[in-house]
Image 1 (spheres, rainbow, N blue to C red):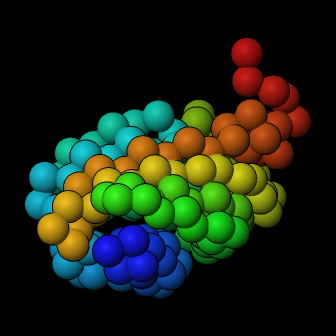
Image 2: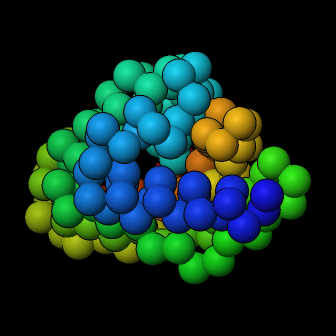
Length: 138
Protein backbone atom coordinates (compact mmCIF):
# COMPACT_ATOMS: atom_id res chain seq x y z
CA UNK A 1 0.00 0.00 0.00
CA UNK A 2 2.74 2.50 0.84
CA UNK A 3 4.44 2.00 -2.55
CA UNK A 4 1.12 2.64 -4.33
CA UNK A 5 0.45 5.72 -2.21
CA UNK A 6 3.90 7.09 -3.09
CA UNK A 7 3.15 6.47 -6.77
CA UNK A 8 -0.07 8.49 -6.47
CA UNK A 9 1.77 11.45 -4.90
CA UNK A 10 4.55 11.25 -7.50
CA UNK A 11 1.94 11.40 -10.31
CA UNK A 12 0.26 14.31 -8.52
CA UNK A 13 3.48 16.34 -8.72
CA UNK A 14 4.92 15.06 -12.00
CA UNK A 15 1.72 15.16 -14.02
CA UNK A 16 -0.85 17.40 -12.33
CA UNK A 17 1.51 20.18 -11.21
CA UNK A 18 4.53 19.95 -13.49
CA UNK A 19 2.55 19.21 -16.67
CA UNK A 20 -0.54 21.20 -15.57
CA UNK A 21 -2.74 18.18 -16.32
CA UNK A 22 -5.93 19.35 -14.62
CA UNK A 23 -7.92 16.41 -16.03
CA UNK A 24 -5.69 13.99 -14.14
CA UNK A 25 -6.57 15.82 -10.92
CA UNK A 26 -10.08 14.40 -11.34
CA UNK A 27 -8.60 10.89 -11.25
CA UNK A 28 -6.05 11.36 -8.45
CA UNK A 29 -8.07 13.50 -6.02
CA UNK A 30 -11.17 12.51 -4.06
CA UNK A 31 -14.18 14.57 -5.15
CA UNK A 32 -14.30 16.17 -1.68
CA UNK A 33 -10.53 16.55 -1.24
CA UNK A 34 -9.42 18.94 1.49
CA UNK A 35 -6.44 20.97 0.29
CA UNK A 36 -4.41 23.52 2.25
CA UNK A 37 -1.78 25.14 0.05
CA UNK A 38 1.51 26.83 0.87
CA UNK A 39 -0.12 30.23 0.46
CA UNK A 40 -2.34 29.47 3.46
CA UNK A 41 -5.49 29.06 1.39
CA UNK A 42 -7.77 26.13 2.11
CA UNK A 43 -9.90 24.64 -0.66
CA UNK A 44 -12.42 21.83 -0.66
CA UNK A 45 -13.23 19.69 -3.68
CA UNK A 46 -11.43 19.15 -6.95
CA UNK A 47 -12.74 22.42 -8.44
CA UNK A 48 -11.43 24.38 -5.44
CA UNK A 49 -8.06 22.70 -5.84
CA UNK A 50 -7.98 23.59 -9.55
CA UNK A 51 -8.70 27.24 -8.69
CA UNK A 52 -5.70 27.20 -6.36
CA UNK A 53 -3.55 25.75 -9.15
CA UNK A 54 -4.69 28.49 -11.52
CA UNK A 55 -3.78 31.14 -8.92
CA UNK A 56 -0.27 29.71 -8.72
CA UNK A 57 -0.03 29.36 -12.50
CA UNK A 58 -1.06 33.00 -13.02
CA UNK A 59 1.84 34.09 -10.83
CA UNK A 60 4.35 31.46 -12.02
CA UNK A 61 3.48 30.09 -15.48
CA UNK A 62 6.55 27.83 -15.35
CA UNK A 63 6.02 26.70 -11.72
CA UNK A 64 7.69 23.37 -11.06
CA UNK A 65 7.95 20.94 -8.15
CA UNK A 66 10.88 18.64 -7.51
CA UNK A 67 10.42 15.78 -5.06
CA UNK A 68 13.51 15.35 -2.90
CA UNK A 69 12.12 12.59 -0.69
CA UNK A 70 8.90 10.63 -0.17
CA UNK A 71 8.09 8.88 3.11
CA UNK A 72 4.99 6.71 3.46
CA UNK A 73 3.35 4.95 6.37
CA UNK A 74 -0.16 3.56 6.31
CA UNK A 75 -2.45 5.97 4.47
CA UNK A 76 -0.05 8.95 4.85
CA UNK A 77 2.67 10.19 2.48
CA UNK A 78 5.07 13.02 3.27
CA UNK A 79 6.91 14.78 0.45
CA UNK A 80 10.00 16.96 0.88
CA UNK A 81 10.04 19.39 -2.06
CA UNK A 82 11.81 22.16 -3.88
CA UNK A 83 9.68 24.60 -5.89
CA UNK A 84 10.80 27.06 -8.54
CA UNK A 85 9.34 29.37 -11.13
CA UNK A 86 9.50 32.79 -12.76
CA UNK A 87 7.34 35.46 -11.12
CA UNK A 88 5.13 36.72 -13.99
CA UNK A 89 1.96 37.71 -12.11
CA UNK A 90 0.82 39.14 -8.79
CA UNK A 91 1.34 36.92 -5.75
CA UNK A 92 0.98 37.88 -2.06
CA UNK A 93 0.21 41.43 -3.26
CA UNK A 94 3.59 41.58 -5.05
CA UNK A 95 3.30 42.52 -8.74
CA UNK A 96 5.30 40.51 -11.26
CA UNK A 97 9.04 40.97 -10.83
CA UNK A 98 10.34 38.64 -13.55
CA UNK A 99 12.57 37.03 -10.91
CA UNK A 100 13.14 33.29 -10.84
CA UNK A 101 12.62 31.97 -7.32
CA UNK A 102 13.45 28.71 -5.59
CA UNK A 103 12.10 27.68 -2.20
CA UNK A 104 11.47 24.51 -0.21
CA UNK A 105 8.47 22.89 1.39
CA UNK A 106 6.85 19.82 2.85
CA UNK A 107 3.47 18.28 2.03
CA UNK A 108 1.48 15.70 3.97
CA UNK A 109 -1.09 13.62 2.09
CA UNK A 110 -3.79 11.22 3.21
CA UNK A 111 -4.69 8.61 0.63
CA UNK A 112 -8.14 7.01 0.85
CA UNK A 113 -9.38 4.35 -1.58
CA UNK A 114 -6.53 5.11 -3.99
CA UNK A 115 -7.13 8.87 -4.11
CA UNK A 116 -5.75 11.92 -2.35
CA UNK A 117 -8.34 12.79 0.30
CA UNK A 118 -6.33 15.46 2.07
CA UNK A 119 -3.23 17.52 1.30
CA UNK A 120 -1.56 19.92 3.70
CA UNK A 121 1.34 21.89 2.18
CA UNK A 122 3.78 24.15 3.94
CA UNK A 123 6.21 26.13 1.79
CA UNK A 124 8.94 28.46 3.03
CA UNK A 125 7.04 31.72 2.45
CA UNK A 126 9.74 33.77 4.18
CA UNK A 127 12.26 32.72 1.56
CA UNK A 128 9.74 33.23 -1.25
CA UNK A 129 8.77 36.73 -0.06
CA UNK A 130 12.41 37.73 0.39
CA UNK A 131 13.22 36.62 -3.16
CA UNK A 132 10.26 38.56 -4.54
CA UNK A 133 10.69 41.78 -2.56
CA UNK A 134 14.02 41.67 -0.74
CA UNK A 135 12.06 41.87 2.53
CA UNK A 136 11.20 39.24 5.12
CA UNK A 137 7.62 38.63 6.23
CA UNK A 138 6.65 40.52 9.41
